[in-house]
Image (cartoon, rainbow, N blue to C red; front, side, top):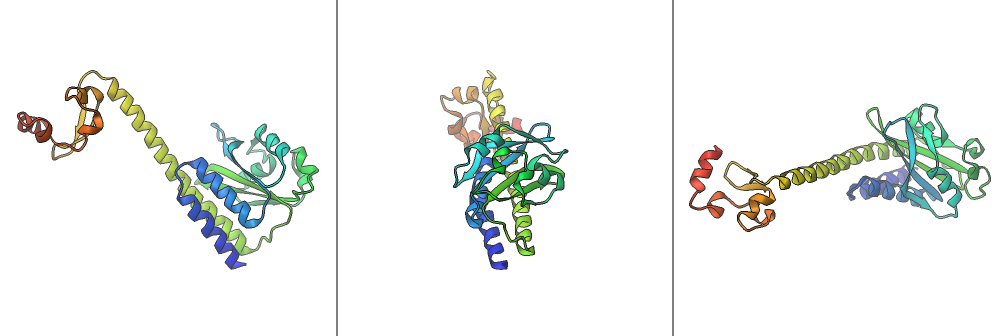
Amino acid sequence: SIEEALALVVEVTLAASELETVQEIAQTALSRICEILGLGFGQVWFPDVSNENLVCSPLAGFSLLEQEQLRQESLDRTLNIGRSEGLPGMAAASRTAVFLSDLKSESRPSLHHSDSLRHGFALPVFNGDNILCVFEFFGPHKLVTDKYFLNALDEIAAHLSVVFERRRAQELLVIQRAHEEIILDSMPVMVWFKDTQGRILRVNRSGAAKRGMEPWQMVGKSDWELYPDEADLYYADDL
């Protein structure tokens, strides 16, 4: 129904928006979808460095059932997107949710003999032409795939695409900042960055050590607070 579809979108998007890392977002979205839809098993596949294959994340999984064999089979496999291998590969190749009623067509043997898993579906998440991940789910009952449910999946995938890219950009920025700090701190001379009012934004360890301070203790302070006798000269040189 439209109410159930709306509840699914709200629950998943709100939960995902509150988290910091891509893996945390993937795990939370996976768990919420499984819980709301009554699915017994779920996992997330991410592209490898070539963007041609999918690999199953060891950090994002959900199971209410004893499905260690299926989980291990998935972790041991690499699915080629171009050849539409496996349910996740089919979803990535088609760029839309794919539903599977006959699990015997799947290449993972444990799905052929499961009494508790009878139907599955996979939901890809894209950013433009780039595949970000594929959510894979299995459960005992066939889902009602009406237009409301399909629209809900599209909304979730679109929201996760934005959240994933934002978090990845933030993670890259943190890494870049850490690398910059290592380079600055390795320099024996004083290096600092100031705003237009002469307040220090960043300073390396050598610069802070000359004042007998830690870098964080100098951030936000002005030339006049740190070097009252030379402040006017420093400020003029910075202009």
